[in-house]
Length: 270
Picture 1 (spheres, rainbow, N blue to C red):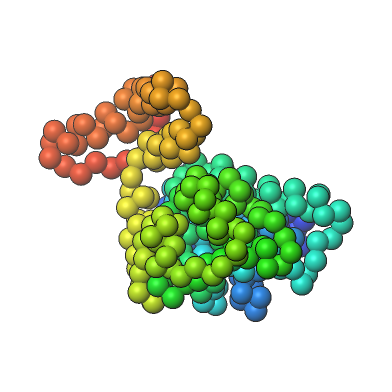
Picture 2: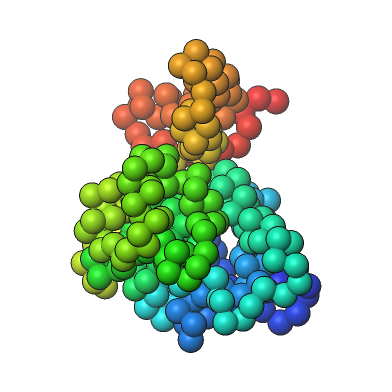
């Protein structure tokens, strides 16, 4: 059953919903009247969900989506930024860091619009499933704003510096087809098919080896800033954990027996 997630203040929630089933935590931005644009309280609710997910061993995959046919229109500018704007931005930044720091795989399921911080929220996930009718924009410049929610870090790594500048400086709307060609959409679906594709991807990830997937995610995220020698050493350390302490030994036994392995992520050394 889907329940509203209470914000850190303890006040009544509802801007963010969370539902856990079969290891998949589905997080739904729930402000459809604003195309799921998030005010400061909603950003804090979202951070609370991410922090809770990180501490919950039952969560093996996180799926992020929006209610009412849109993913997220970014920050709710009509709601304003209470208090000093730098302090408010630091609170929003905490959400980006919490998402990036999640050990489990994350999947964004996008329909409708994903613009501004909303698009960067999707790009902060490991994989993006988008319906063909989805529309994207780094819309900040149209609002007299500079890029935020990690866009200056994400975009150059995903599309290269020149295309990143094009997207951020011109603030054009990009179709889902073009976003896929740029490498900003992982799976492109027909309208109405995103749920099925996302569920299939999430189920495969949830059935995978959680420790190995987490370490692979970390190796890839950090590898862009490392030398080859540093990457190889990090891979060796991670693989030694797999080989000695988690799912690899049982997986080899299952392979030799011509059976499908069951990955638990449990520590195998006593």
